[in-house]
Each structure stands twice: as C-alpha cells, then as structure tokens.
Length: 334
Image 1 (cartoon, rainbow, N blue to C red):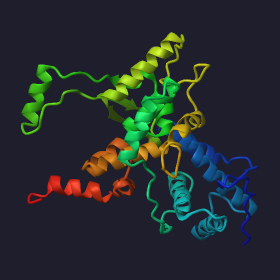
Image 2: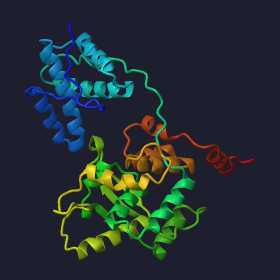
Image 3: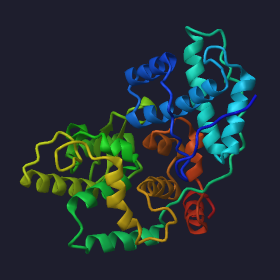
Image 4: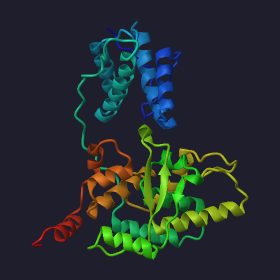
C-alpha cells in the first residue's frame, strides 16, 4: 500500500486538505460542541481527522472499515513527515476517541484502541526563574508606555496559570468573586478549621473558567495584585466607552484573538532569558513556581485544569535552591 500525504505548507507541519469532510467526522465534531469543547480543541481534532480522511481517500479506504494495521500505517506516515513522538501520540489519542464514538453506533470495534504510544522525549517546560521574574516585573511596573491592556493580560496569565484560549473566552461576569479583606467571621471560621495556621490578611478572588480544554470547567483564585491590575484595566476600558461583555476585547468589541495576545506578550518576554517567548511560558512559570515552593502536585493539577497528574509532573523539575528550601521546611531534623 502506498501512503499518500498532502504537501507541507510550512515548518509547523500544517497541511492543505482539499477533500470534503465525511459525515462521520462532522457528526463527531458536533458532539464535541455539545460537550462544550473549546473551539481551539475542535479545530485541532478536525485537522487530525481531515488528514486521516485524506489518507483514506488516497488509499481507497473507508473510515467505517479501516483496520488497526492501516491506522498504524497512517501513524508511520506521520513519523516519516517528521512529527515528533508527542505529536504522533496526540494524533493517536484523537483517533481513539473518534473511533470509540463510531463504535457506539457505526462500527463493531475501535481499531485504534490498543495501538501503543510512542516513547516521548522529555521536554523540560520553558519557564522564567524567580529572580529573573522579579526583574521583569520591576521593568514592567516602571514602563509608563506599556498599555494597561497588555499589563492586564500578562498579569492574568501569570497570576492564574490559565491557557491563552481560556483567557480569550472569559466574560466579565466570569469574575465570580473579587478579593477582599477578611471579616471577623471569616477569621473565626479559618481559625476553627486551621488552628495552627496564621489567619489570612486577604481572601483571594475567584475566576470561573467555563470554556476550558477538554470541556473541564474550573475555578481559579487570583492575587491581590492581579485584582488591582484587572480593575485598573476595566476603568480605562470604561473611559473608552467599551461596553463589551468580554473581559478582553478588540477595538470592535469582539473577543480578543490568541494571535493578538501573542503579539502583546512577546515583547515583554523578550526581556527574559527564556528560550520560548509565547504566553504559554507564563503558564509554565506559574506551575513551576508553585511546585518549587512546595505546593501539592494534586492541587496544582486542579489549578491548571489537567486531566491527569502525569501532565502536571512535567513541572516538577526544581532547581537546587528550591529543593533545599523544601527540604528544610519539611524534614523534622533539617
């Protein structure tokens, strides 16, 4: 059998697909919309399944009868194109869920179910070290030319660890609770629950992330400084007569696009030594700093919205200074 793949359009392995999508793919993507998958996730699923459909058409195959061996041939073609093991595994995960959907009503089996995953190279997430981050924040604070919108987006990403797509989908009403100084009743309840811990001087605000990767909504706290920056941004936006319901909007009042966020965050990260300059670096930084300071990995998993703790474990690398601090804080004889 000759594997036929469509020509590469750029270095990011995007391919031009010139075939009509099958009804099976359309139906499956519609179910993802009903399950509130994010538009970005659905787009990625569509790209994977369209490439499989193109492979089937080129090799005179059918989605309803394709076999396990033929799917493995498709995966081998992905490797030949230069996709990394982590990307091939991502394709495989999409195929497994797609054929499981078909198995429920159009097939008797899931040909992708038992296909093994490729061994992935360990990729240490790119993050900004704490000392460098302090210098970066000082530079940002002392820059009067920095637009308040850019500062607000930077602070929301760094202060909550949310994904760029999640931030772009936030509405103002998703800020469920603003932070506040605790009342006497709050302090009493806290002391009853945690008698050995000092009472908080400030109660964190809460943002509800409703449109999240995989459809898993969650609530995340935000700091006092994040609250200050968001409120300052909203005041400026109100002065500009913007009545958009979205937390971050473009000039016409529509949702801010991910590409625009990259353009605004990139110049700030150019001031750091981080090898990667995209806003996802701020998510990595958020997670790494929490874990370096002794945060429970299960709690960090929930804050990040990961399905599996295996994903969160990518952030568990610690520098020697952080390891010593955690050791001294936790070991009874240190």
